[in-house]
Image 1 (cartoon, rainbow, N blue to C red):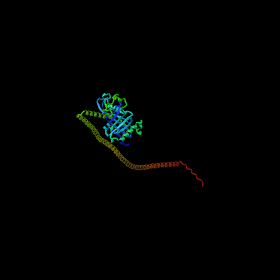
Image 2 (cartoon, rainbow, N blue to C red; image 1 turned 90 degrees about the vertical axis):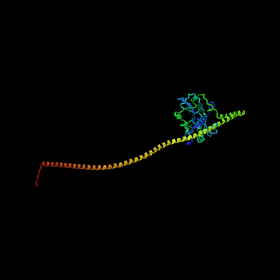
Image 3 (cartoon, rainbow, N blue to C red; image 1 turned 180 degrees about the vertical axis):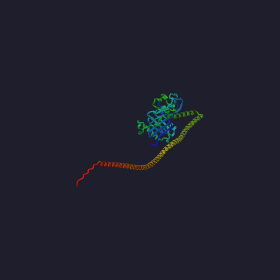
Image 4 (cartoon, rainbow, N blue to C red; image 1 turned 135 degrees about the vertical axis):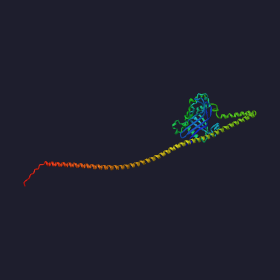
Amino acid sequence: MSSSDVIDISAQPATATWTADNQTFCRLETLKFQIFYEPSTNAAFFKLRAPVTFQTTATKLKRTTAVWLFIAPERIATLALQGEDGSDEAIRKQFGTNAVSLCFNLNRPAALVLPPDVDQDCKEQASCEMIVALQSLARATSFTISANLPGRTVSQAHLLSLCTAASRSSGSSCVESASTSGTLVSSKHAADTTSLYGGKGGRVIEGDSPALLALTGNDASPPPYANVGASPPSMPASWPEKKRRRRASSDAGPDPDRQHLGKGVELRMAFEELKSGLRSELKQDLRRELLVELKAELKHELRAELKDELRTELKDELMSEVMQEVETRIFQRVEQSLQEQADDFETQLYDVRHEVGGTIYSELEDQTYAARQELEDFVKDEMDEAQTRVEDRIIERLQNANMNMTFSDL
């Protein structure tokens, strides 16, 4: 699965249409649509953003900020794609040839994400048309979101793949088998609310919870068609009636001033329509130019960050290589020095052994000679003493001897 298969669309102008609880056809514009879909992980998420002016609880001041409608893929029963041919005239006129409509059918209403400091007790706020419309949209389980999605942004094939995966997700209740069965799960990054509103986090209100009704009251109904109201085809249907009334007045008698005024109104309407179209085209061109500039700035910043990271990594790698080389050289020098010292020690030890051996031999020879002389003197003295004692004993015996001589007769 390549990275080109990932759908990551943000801040696309969109319009939502749905049927309210009182069976009134509702239409809400000035929305921004976001789609995220990663086929490799079966992660997806849909978000609508609307600008709403709130009164804060802390300062009681009004502040315009964004309100989100989170549509988790686990809540989608079916998701169908309508191209330009399937969209109504108002949608085609608003978004042109790149108009794409996604028809959502939910098994559970979406969730509304509000700022954490919104004052729910403000009566003026509870009657705000945008809040009432968003409350009605959050309670709906069937609605259509139309947006301008050029083919270079996302192809029809990718959108059809997303619709197929989202519709298939409704048939499985086991989230753990999403990676194998193709069931879509909510993207943790896209569904994160803690980073919203300057890191303060958003307050999530489920579309089927009583807390949603507390925003505007249980008896709140969608506002007129100026923001949310009748079906789009009913609006152009009223124009022929005005033209017929104008022709009826002309039959009564020609009125050049009225005709001139009518032409002026038509020219002004044509001018406003042309101005609106040029404004939309210019906005798209400026958006593309700004996107290119932002991409260039982001690339420059990322290039600088990556350059620093690569410099650090290369420095670490070079340091590691240099340290290894230095360690090798140090080990070689230490080994060589130890070998030289061992050779010197062995030589010195040989000399010491030779010198000590000669000294010991000389001393031993001297001591042996002295011991021999002492032994010889001792033996000589003993022998002389023994000889003297023997001689004295012989003389003593001879002195004490009696001589008897007997002569025989021959």
